[in-house]
Image 1 (tube, helix red, strand yellow):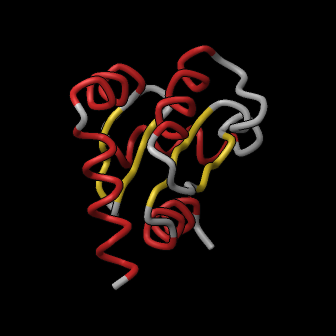
Image 2 (cartoon, rainbow, N blue to C red):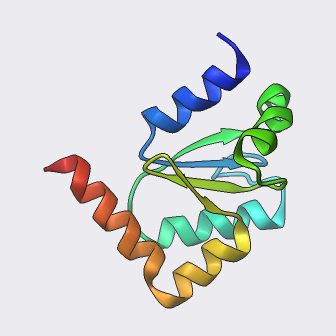
Image 3 (cartoon, rainbow, N blue to C red):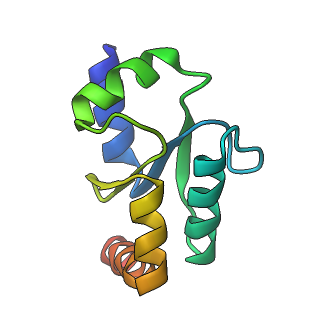
Length: 108
């Protein structure tokens, strides 16, 4: 499977997916750590891909997403953004709203 196909499949297979440095239990950068904390506050499960362990994805995803940095949050196949956008959305309540709406969509 090509890297691009792998990325597209991961995004398709996971309602909430974060591409990050490290793991949710052990983030390897401050931005990934903050993003995971924000997602955790929303109370729903999410998938992750450690781009430090997947260099091919780390190199190709920024081109595919047209977003140069990590973390990258994808919800329902759409790129939401990176750490600052995630934190802004958490603060204004739209992150939890989007997550709950999306999870409900798939659980009904």
